[in-house]
Image (cartoon, rainbow over all chains, first blue to last red):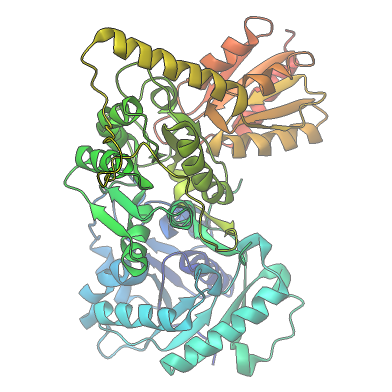
Length: 224
Length: 354
């Protein structure tokens, strides 16, 4: 089954695991396949490098961007636009990019009832290289905290283990092992593995293990 | 070295402090340094350390003074407006000759300003972080790896010279993520502090850590002694990176986040055959006069690039001392210059005769 097609997808995870970069890439890929795509920046915690910073890239692809009114401005004001309610009623593919950890994910809890009777998936993004102690137990624990505040259960894991420009195949392999351990602790499937586009093009995937391979470009973050 | 991980600059600062043996962190929240305090609040209790969110910036910096006077490695972090509030305490720390590490993840100013990255606290860090005759050693990282590396060095320099050391970072470096590794964990070597007020046990006269002098002549003597130490630091501790400066006719001087943008512009200009190089100060105080002096023979022009209205440019002019023209390009208020903007400035200078 292909993930995040014509449905509501909620992307959550520890902050800095690459949720925003993944969300922006996914939105762009789906738009390029002719789908109607809406991306919702639900982050009211992080001041920089957020989905709405890439509004122009996204809108140029015909993607609708819904973001906190004061996101990426100097007002540290956690207010949500009315348009966020409409996001749940949109046709096509809707991608919610949550803030990091339980703190950043809390916003989704506010909208929990809007998902009643709707087909959605909540994808937990993990990155082995965001964890200094490299401890799947702790990674599993963070999801429990996110589930508590969103009042939603994750449906799958996205393995986004990477070191940005320094990622090699060896990192991908070690990341898979980490994803396997985390998935087994959580009793969830690894539905996809994310790779930088140049790595993905040569990668011989055992999709039973990796899930769908999602090639991405590094969009989020400074360019110098 | 440990296996590389991805970290935000702010997290790398925090982890590096812990690895340098700092177990006492006193802070007060402010964007964009938040992740540093958040990291400390999660990690310190797990390793027997202390994270304390003080009632104010003033309280936090005075707790650092107290902890340091008692012989412990202590740190605080803030962003621009918070550093202004801490500046009285920083002056007391300098006047008490105790080491401490202070992190400034700069944002736009003056006043409440903005929460976007800035380098407008250069003057404050290098010339006037509080009242009185004193200096801080100021280190300016430009990568997340340097954020990690400089914290341990800051603690060591502080101990070596018994003075406060500031890491002058900015919101972009604090918030961005890059791969980083740490030295293999061993027990950090923390020098003895025989001067510390940590209890004499009846075996020696008591130590006094203090910045108040009853007699003016005693204060003058102490300050003069301190300035002799500063002269040694100016000789021994200057650090800078020189990039493509050997044959450079245009020399850019930039530190921290703006040096990353400048380097990118230097590469583009070199690809077009323009002889341009970059001097990146790593110590802002002591200012790396030697590295800039070394470029004077080949340089025809200097360009200082900062995320401010032009502050470090004064120090560049002091070194160049009228021998070559020094110009400035900057963006301020939280705006980061683009490589394209700097390339334009380089081309303008390249087209003009000296």
